[in-house]
Length: 450
Ligand code: UGA
Image (tube, rainbow, N blue to C red; front, side, top):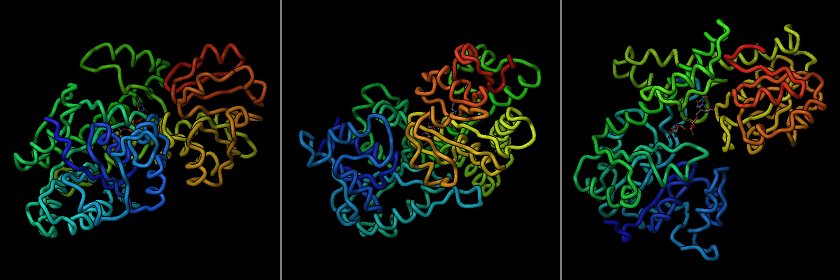
């Protein structure tokens, strides 16, 4: 049954933590969220989300204490002491980015969160890791917890990987495809079943396993997804060589249920804060375990993916005359790694824009939600306030993130603004007929030139 008496804390309030905290309040729990960045806590405390995530602000405002009409179940703090005193179950949701210049992931945020939390654990509690970590971390962290916590082994660990997608974080958290818990005791399993009683009732499979399997489920799932994208992008390369159409090909193989039609969109490939770094960290960890041979294919998945970005740069160069980008204006539609997100981490769109800029092109970028983050990451690029302004005077236009706004653009008006009507669709998402009708040369990736 669902025990509302349980009090929950969420440590780290990024995409994962902020969504998890709001979702836990939605399920009926009293929730306290912690972040070490005071600005984030100030924003969240007044119901503002520090990033763009559809539906999250509404959910937050429904529960944050002090907001008129809210349930008051959700509060935020920077105090570890408060977190320790408050929580029966602590979810650790801090991020594990790629280490600079290495494949391995940086565990320092996880490690320091555990150290800070452990010192406050003076009564029996369950600590639940949600961050994506190298297999073996949970066992190491469990030992560390027992050693550091004043209650010793009464502070128990469980591992509960998260599978939410940015842009769909709220939906994925409230209606997960599955809940995976790695546990070492029946008590931990029972507690987590209590926490997740509501969505489980709504039909999510509940998979109970050991620590290493729980950690591996997460990296295996992301590796599979990355492989699927690189597979279809490899087919796009072959289609380009053979004059085939990868979009039709994906549709046709997707009718086989064993293959499925999802995650087979060819284009400039995958980016973001997860897939690229997760496959690299997985290879690094497998190497440490002496199992590197098992994952050599992921090296290929990564290089197929990175080749897509270079290929888009080549197509753009060809479109502006073939030699160089010097003196050429390039309008770029999209900066985020995918639509419905403001996240530009390892964004293929921004990477392509940056490469062209570094090769002397005059690049002007527009993105519906990612402008602030893009400017911060790449201040030397040109930015425009609208798609039309980005396209003004362009010798070539690149469509690099498939926002709905771009599918609804007025191709005729844009054609009047551009110097040359050439559009390269890096996401195979625009309606080619509409653009051609408006006088554009439309080119997609892995599809025949018309
Ligand atoms: C991914 C996984 O999909 C989530 O299940 C996982 O929880 C999350 O990582 C994570 O580890 O936290 P996310 O990074 O939000 O989620 O984005 P995806 O929707 O997976 O897209 C990743 C990239 O692949 C994007 O750049 C997208 O444009 C690209 N993509 C996706 C394609 O190029 N083709 C496709 O067919 C699908």
